[in-house]
Amino acid sequence: MKIDKENVKRVARLARLELSDEETATMTRQLDTILQYVAKLDELDTSDVAVTTHPQDAVNTFRPDETQPSLPRDKALAASPLQNGEAFVVPRVI
Amino acid sequence: MYTMTIAQAREKLARGEISSVELVQSVLARIDAVEDRTKAYLALDREGALAAAEEADRKGGDSPLHGIPLSVKDVFCTKNLPTTCGSKMLAGFIPPYDATVIERLSDAGAIMLGKVAMDEFAMGSTSENCAFQVPENPWKPGYVTGGSSGGSAAAVAAEECFASLGSDTGGSIRQPASLCGIVGMKPTYGRVSRYGLVAFASSLDQVGPLTKDVRDCALMMNVIAGHDPRDSTSIVRDVPDYTTMLTEGLQGMRIGVPREYFGHGLDPEVDRAVRDGIAMLADAGAEIVDVTLPHTEYCVAVYYLIAPAEASSNLSRFDGVRFGHRDMDADSLIDMYRSSRSQGFGDEVKRRILIGTYALSAGYYDAYYKKASQVRTLIRDDFTRAFEQCDLLVSPVTPTPAWKIGEKSDDPLALYLSDILTISANLAGIPALSVPCGISQNGLPIGMQMQAAHFNEGILLKAAWNLEMQNGLNLKKPTLP
Image (cartoon, rainbow over all chains, first blue to last red):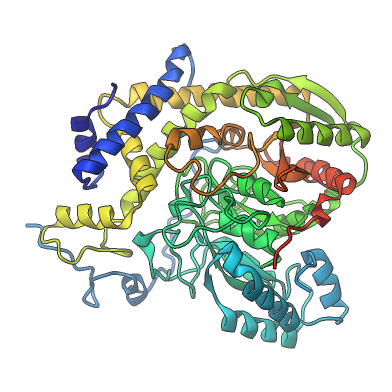
């Protein structure tokens, strides 16, 4: 067993997910199977291998730092589940 | 009329023999006749499509897709149509802008019919993870379309549109194209803009066409390929006219057969169909060579760490604040995030967010994400070496033809393993396509995968077109009501 229920609960908390006890049990079993499978990578010695994080050789892509038209506020707010015409509304934070 | 290809319909439109309104009416009637069976469309814009067709007829024009009705996977932002990504999280979401590829289709004169079904957030290999409906394979009732672009593949195979756009992160265009007997291409990473594509795994995602034949694939590529300043990962590079690549004869082309792609678990019928296809490519003049991609057996493990890791980051934007589902009853911000996400996401999405978060978390990063990124280099190097010996790699797309809906849905790892032949192309960023090469005794299509070096889409199209000329499978259609 590489991953247990406590691990899964901790990771769910980090990922801002809530799992029922039943979901936690199922996910623990499935994640364990998957993680045991991916441990296959340990067969390979990669100590001298560089990482590939991106399949192209392009490095940094910049555009000129100029002001451009952006989404008008009403359109940016339109899809929000809760807004007051000026801002997104969220539960009290402080 | 709905049975034509884009190329045929364009010719008739240009000669004034038919109108775009007639084309749209024909396709809408076809949708009414078969949609109960295929369940491809999540949103259909009848009025919008007819109005656009009237406008196209009135204005006239000879742009490459002028007056042609298309569908797109529900993963692309469309200004006037809901964009759900197959998820309850985005039910009813109407984006404030169009994806670049949607603008390009529209600028080329295409008529938007609607949005088609997909696995939730493009995570899946059968489209069964769609939160709203599960599309069915037009070739056999009760069989999967493949995924995640299953609605696109079903709609094109059942001729409910002339072509569709999909996205491919680990085979999501090629695999459903193969299982539904049509052509599907994942272009080179960076060839097509992803601005307005809802992101799944950003170092792997690419947009591409699903079409009735190879010529239409080339036509669609002409329209969607090219640099976009709004997508910093799109590459500044000229786009050739892909239709000029469709010439007869493969003399001088070296075609590599990677031995690892014909291994354990390959259905004998698939093996035979692909080998028959290879013989046809040899008949057309190609030289066939054996090649090896020694790290193929590691690609599933690499993919199912990298893709979930990137997804866990990309999907953090769904927090109930700016768009999408929100739990209105939660009284603290953290609770609101947690319950909104838990109610909005389906099981497969949660599973991948958890794997990805775990693989990126403190103490595990080196063992999982970094290790996978190193093995990714080895996989990429395999392709570099293979393309020193050949111009093109051919193989099956999937180890088996389509299977029954529900058959593999309880075993995530078994499904992940069925992606083994398609995910390397995404890890390496190379172009790849699926083209029909046979039909099983059970009446299910079988596809051949072709992969080429970066930006060699033209070689893929040329080889696929030569195969299609010989096997004529583009003319073979499923029997539907």
